[in-house]
Amino acid sequence: MYEHHSTDLSVTWLGQTMPGCLYNASGVWCREESELEAVRQSAAAVISKSATLAPREGNPEPRYCQTPLGSINSMGLPNRGFAYYLDYARRYDYLCGKPLFLSLSGMTLEDNCEMLRVLSEQGLPAIPEVNLSCPNVPGKPQLGYDFAATAAALDAFDRAYSGLYGVKLPPYFDPAHFSAMADILNRHPRLAFVTCINSIGNGLVVDVESESVAIKPKDGLGGLGGDYVLPTALANVREFHRLLPGKEVVGCGGVKSGREAFMHILAGARAVQVGTCLYHEGPAAFARIAAELAQLMRDKGYRSLDDFRGKLRVL
Ligand code: RRO
Image 1 (cartoon, rainbow, N blue to C red):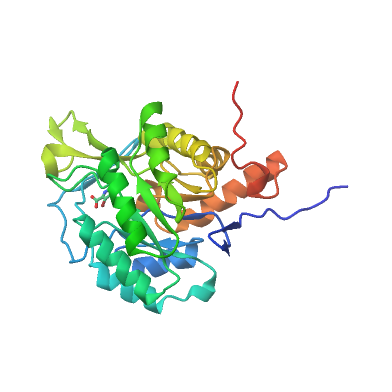
Image 2: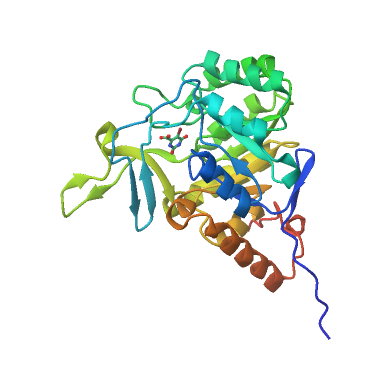
């Protein structure tokens, strides 16, 4: 006699419960309202393309390339401008139970603070995820690799914004860097979550047949996503989950089936974003990955994400 329990993928955090754990990685399927609405229909939450104050065309094409192991991109922050995503956030159906996150990536600290002030004044339920890690604007280093500048930026965000917010971090590769960044983040109680990771910046994909780089900007350098980044993403999720008690970690990097989503949650992720796989498969990826995750959980006897979140074993 089998007992049948339903498998529950819902996630309660930031004072709300969302119906599942999967949503898009910022940058993918989220530049236009039609794309954002398609994500809202098929995922458990929505995040918009990183916004600058003014609209941007982004870098010259080709600027995205799929490879057998993932992707390389140097989009260069193409977006409709903050006012467009703010207008979407004003009209968003918050009662659908799917949180709306707004990714902000101002060209300057003052631009980020300006966008945060406007959001604060509007009092919308949309939650900012400030991007500290865009690798693709020529001449602009990733803020998250400059610890002093990150510390100053977070102090300014606290003054500009009165609610809970998150940051999108670049991948780190050394325990000294995990710990230095965690010490900075822990000084900010309203920093409620970190999303780990952005693409691994400034990789180079080479095509042997044409003896050429794969994308045009920065002589071929671009951010890596997909299979290339999964172990790096998991390391960042696990380390920040350990080092940031009371904060949440959103996993992002290399999720293409229920198995990678499971790995991120086991490493400590509260929710999981899908980037490269969503780019290649479209929003149908969410239902497929969720079904695979639910099946894997049933096989293991888990009924909710709380049963295994952060319970990765060490030897
Ligand atoms: O638009 C981009 O080139 C881009 C951004 Br803002 C980012 O944060 N991460 C990425 O891989 N591409």
